[in-house]
Amino acid sequence: MLKLVKPDKKYERQYKEMMDEWYTVGEKIVPYSIRRLDYKKFDKYLYGFEEERNGCLYGGIPATTLWAYDDERDIVVGTVNIRHWLNEELLKDGGHIGDGIRPSERKKGYATKMIALALEECKKLNINRVLMVCYKDNIGSAKSIIKNGGILENEIINEDETIDQRYWIELGTQS
Image 1: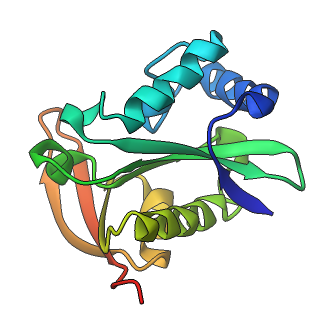
Image 2: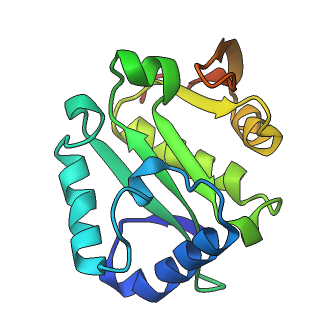
């Protein structure tokens, strides 16, 4: 069963396996929060997630990184980074949730489930309207966002000529 877990030493092996795979493939690792420090220095790496909760990234905005752990397979399949609110930069180009699935685990439904779990975390943070942003050419990411209720607001052309799609997901208010 897939669940979101806080970064923890007990998942060190599983997490390093995911990161090793991602670096071997050579593609850009997302979300940013998991590539910003050296994961091989694990204790310091874990501390970086504590700093993030205190607002050291994103212009002082607190964020929470969680790992998507499949406990039946004993594997970390991906990560989510939840920004607790948005500044101007995140409103344009980051959103509330950044997510990524390790290369070997894509197209298995993990991203859709991981986003659903992240949206539950957003509710706990009283984020009732969630922005998610993905590259237009990332069809899998767009599908996962749409399956979770994402409605395309617009597209933005970046300086490097890539196109970001901005999706909003309405969660409503907690009862």
